[in-house]
Image: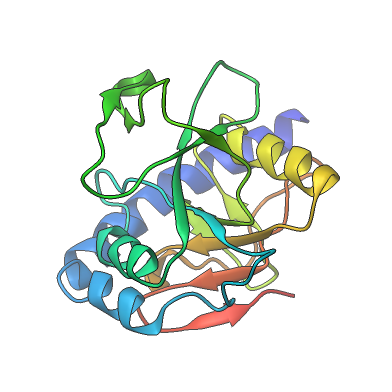
Length: 193
């Protein structure tokens, strides 16, 4: 990554973190229910039945009510697990009520004995997004590596989940950055492009 792009991403992350904090304060109470009521923009089917959700932390939009709805609809649910730096994520089956352990950066993850799965749909956390489907992540490249790997294996749908206040006109990006298929916010769900 060029020095100019790295500097642009660093500045954008600072700005996006502030914007997410403001959006969280404004919508944290109503956003989880809005996501759950709308549900996913894709349907469950025999070839589209495993969804990876993420455990929200800090000022990320809460996915917990949506998670409960997906389980009730019959989706097989999973959580992402960081295995090592500069590697794709792995996904372990999990539903609310199942055991969790502390993983890297003290993020709660399913234990090692939970079955590993390959999701058909990924709900992706982010700092910022644009209408073309590019996201600004936290800088580790985990979801970009993961989406590249999964898309080489099968059809997957990547859905960015965020507050509407996290939208940017254009996210700084390079050829490594993977595009999202959809964005879900507390106000709308739209197909990227």
